[in-house]
Image 1 (cartoon, each protein chain N blue to C red):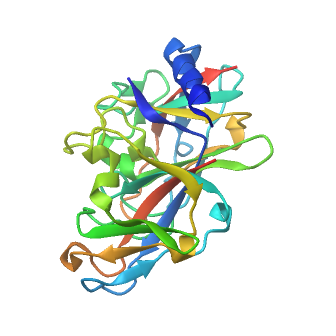
Image 2: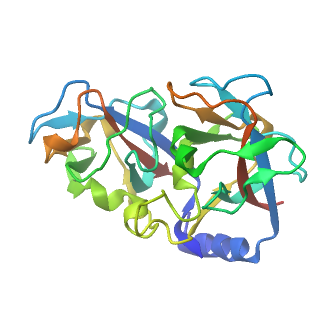
Length: 132
Length: 158
C-alpha cells in the first residue's frame, strides 16, 4: 500500500522551547533559507515517537497534543491553530497531511502553546515541510 | 507536480521496477558511533538514478535482523528515532534534509497505534548521488557500539 503523497523534497524544521513556554504563548519558526519562496504542499509533525533528538541535539517533545500550528502565507494565516497531533502520521494511519500548494512565510509562522504541561524547557518540536 | 504525474509515479512504484536493500554500516568495526556522525550509503549493486520509495527495514518493522556472515546486526527498533536520512542529487542539492528514519519504518513507532499501517512512502528523487547521501546519528547519550547497520530498502526507477 502506498502513501498519499509523492515526496520530491523535504526539509526538517525545528522549533526549540529554550524557555519553558506558557499557555497561549506563540513561538515562531526561525528563518530557513532553503524554504524561502518554496511552494509547500504537505506538512508532517514529529514527536519523540518518531524522532528522539533533533539535528541540533535537542530532546523532542513526547507528544504533540499541546501544540497548535499556524502557517502564514504573506500576511494571511491560512492555516490557523492546526492541532499538531493531527499532523503526526503515526497517529493517523500513516497519512501525510497535504495542503493547497502555496508559498509559506516561515518567519511569520508559529506554534501556539495549548497545554504547557506537555513541554519541558529546551525541548523541541520538529516539522517536515514537503515542497516542490 | 500535477495529479496525473503523481498518479503515474504511484503506478510505477506499484510495478516495483527495481528493489534493493542497502545495509548501511554505522561505524567501522572497533569504533563507536558518535553523535552527529554520518554513515554514508555505499556500494549499491544497481545503478541508482531515481528513487521511488524508501523503507527502513529494521526488525519488527521490516523483518531483517542481521546480515549473516558480516557480523553486522540491525539496530534495535527502539533506536530508529535516533537517526535521520539526507539524500542529495548529483548537483549536490539536498533533496531530503534530515528525514527522520522513524517516519520511514513499515508499521510506525513501537507502541503507537494506529502507526503507518504498512504504507510505503512514495518519493520522486531524480538523479540521486547515493554515495554522497548519508544517515546521521543524532543522539548524545548511549552511543551505539560497533557492528550495527541499518537496512534501507529502496525502489529505483532507472
